[in-house]
Amino acid sequence: MKTLFAVLLASGAAIATAGASETMTQSDCRNAFDAIVGLNVGHDVTTEGPVTVEDGHCRVEGVVVRTRGGSTYTPLLRAEAITWTGRGLETLGEGRPPHAVDLTVIGAYPDPSAALDGKSGMEWFRWSLRVGAEAAKRDLHLAYEWDPQTRDLIISDFSVDSLGDNDTRMTASFSNVDLARAPEGIEELTKVRINEITFESGFHGQFEQVFVQTFGGVLGNAFGAKPDTFMDGLRKTATAWIAAAPAPLVPQASGDALNAFIATLPHPRGHLSLAVSGPEGGIDVSRLLQGAARGEIRTVEDVAKALPGTRVTAEWQPDTSGRR
Image 1 (cartoon, rainbow, N blue to C red):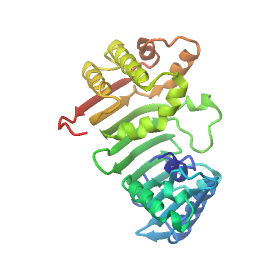
Image 2 (tube, rainbow, N blue to C red):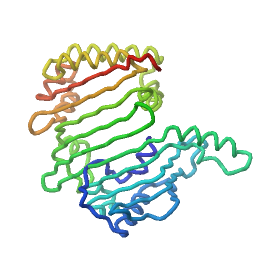
Image 3 (tube, rainbow, N blue to C red):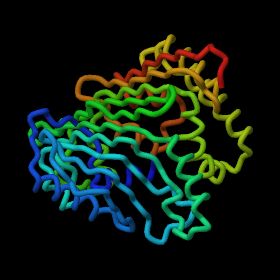
Image 4 (cartoon, rainbow, N blue to C red):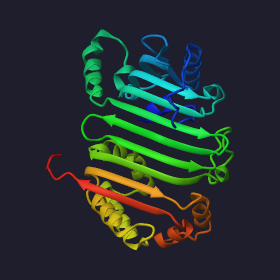
């Protein structure tokens, strides 16, 4: 998935809702695709055909991304098709996100066989890898809209549809976002206000495939603990923080739901819904970061004081069928 995001979102755009009235021209589509490809330094992007326009939407089929100089085990990307509309797409050529995007990726999956040479002796091995990788196909949808006047950024849909029960969806609302230029340092980023973020996902191998396989090695190097010891400590620490969280921050029912989810790690089976909402004007994360820099954030009570009006709600529906 890391390669997928690097390829499709290299512009730094990742998020809002282009209205249905956004009608793309052949020139719009070609220029946008060329800009995105040009921003993917170190990758070669090929397609089965040209970029076309269908019902006002850009479309390109048979996308294959190869990493230059990549090893045999590099998980390169394939996608059956990509469609999109947008507004302010000319900013892509400047390395900045458009004002609005509605992007759909159909049948995307990382394909390690694309990194292997085409020698006949490798044919069956390449085929075996590709067929296995195809089982991980996913459809993605990303829709966002940014208002340059109010500086409001709305992520109306960021969803991943996959085989099985691992579909994921996120929405979000931010204020004081300036996409007109790249932020200069962390201080500018902290000016962004979080109004609300919602997340829901099925977990039937999702945690293991996405979190453990992606971050497992990094966590091991960072904490220097054995996997089982680390997971045990993670569960205990998270449970302790939830227990100490003030009710305005984490209501009792939400705390119980989070504890039930945490207890199942690293093999959760069920459906998790999570939402973070802030007061009017949004969550001011800078207060938390400044407090941490001064060594004032030591407990969950400190977090609650630094983020007044913030509320975390959660629901956990375990799968009780007994299947793995």
